[in-house]
Structure formats: C-alpha cells, structure tokens
Length: 330
Image (cartoon, rainbow, N blue to C red; front, top):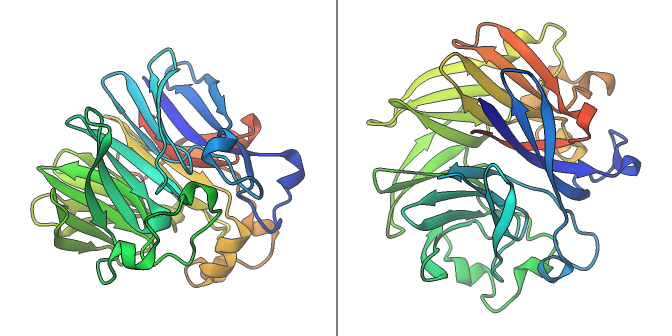
C-alpha cells in the first residue's frame, strides 16, 4: 500500500523556528510513501502561477486533498488541481475569483466540495457544468456576501483574516455535508441544498481534518486528539489522546492529516508555527517551557490499531517537507 502526502516547503532562509511567518512557502510538494518497503519518493513540486496568486508576500503550498477513481484532487491556496494516478499528470486546474486560502476538496457524484477558508465558505462545484451549484455558509449568522464583496478577485488578496469560522475539512455522507470549524470547535452539518441541519461539538480541541471508517467519523484535533463520532447519532464514542506517548512533555506539533488501514493509523504532525504558539497558548499549556521543547519536526507517526503503541516515525524534514496537510491511502 502507498500513502500520498500533501504539504509544503520553505526556503532554507525561512527555516529558523521563531521566524515571524512560517508559512512563506516556496512550493507545494507531494510525496509517495510505500508502507511495505518503507521508501519515500517526491512526486510533485509545484509553484502557483502568478495569474492565480498575489503579486508579493504570497505563500505557495499544497493543502488537503482526496482520491477518487485513480485521480488526486488537491488544493493550493487558490486552486484545485486534478492529477491522474499513478502518473501524477496534471489534467485540470480550477481557479475561481472567490478562492482564498483553500483547505480541502473532495469528489462526490461528479461534484467537487471545496473548502474556501478565507471566505468561511464551502461550495459545491459541478465538474460537468463548470459552475458553482451550492454555497454552504460556515458562519450562518452573517450572509457571505454581506461580509465580502462578490466582485473582488480574492486570489489576489493575501489574507482575509480574522476569519469567523475558519472551516478546514469537508466530508459528504448520505447526502449530508459535514464541515469542521476551527473557531467553534465543532462540525457543522448541512443538507445538500445548504441548510444547516445540526452540529457536532468536539470540545477536546480544535478540529482539523477527518475521515469516515465503518460506523464512525474520525476527526483529528490540532492538540493531538483522535475523536471517534458515531455516524448515526453524532455522539462522541471515544477520544484518544496521542500526547500520552510523549514522555518529556513536549507538544506533539500541529496534528493534521490522518489515514487508517486495517492494522495501522497514520497521523501527521507539523512543526508548530510561531503564530500558533501565541494564538493557542491555552491548549499548549505547560508543555511549553522553552524554545527547545517546541522543536519536534514535521513527521508522520504510525500507531498500531488501537493507538497504544508507536510502530514507526517518518521524519519529513529529512526530505524538506516543512508541513503536512493530508495523508491519503492509495
């Protein structure tokens, strides 16, 4: 089995840990990891063309993606790119003027569900009709186009922060749309036509990405929890704290990226960035006592089936990958 890992790379000059902006990425990178022979191979390096990004002070990275029918769907900050597998041939680019800080894309019934974090929004985009079919407002207290100017080209804007919800990840299950929200620490549940139906409170940390396995939704939180939620009643079944494996009380890093096999669980951790050190000091807590303790590298950790043991650690900084967004089974 192979794992596809999406993320980004910094220039060597930006690698100082307490640099002001960790995310001045110079290129997106995608690696393929063979879980049998333990070999890792760089498959794609990518730079967003100037047409689709700001002219200066911009960052380039792959964010999260998904796989469907031997195609890789992956986001940059302002694009959705579609590659064939296993060739990794780019066959389509989608870039709309409302794209800003994209975080995730998933294929479902000839539509792409795209997380536009910069606009607190998810959209359903028809691959056949080449247009947006539905908007999912992830901060429904304020209408999207009352907050944002629909006529702007948001690809040319570096940031729209502060975000009101900061959606991260989207899943589609039984004609419902599930979106993780950073600010609210929950999962918002929509109908296909964009109506809010329910929400799942994940009060053990800030949720980032998720997956669907058997009877459960499985969500990561950035402070190192795995939360299993029953698909039927949306109740939390189990919370697994991965911090128990760290004996010297260091922070694990930014927990983001998850994939499950029959026997193993693969979890991504990205080196904590300075802005997050300030924003999230409460959850970091007394694990932060000096700069040295923050310096756990960007890596993938392979846990056994019940997360009781670490089987393997893959240090991605050895391959100049500085942050991870998704781990995808292929």
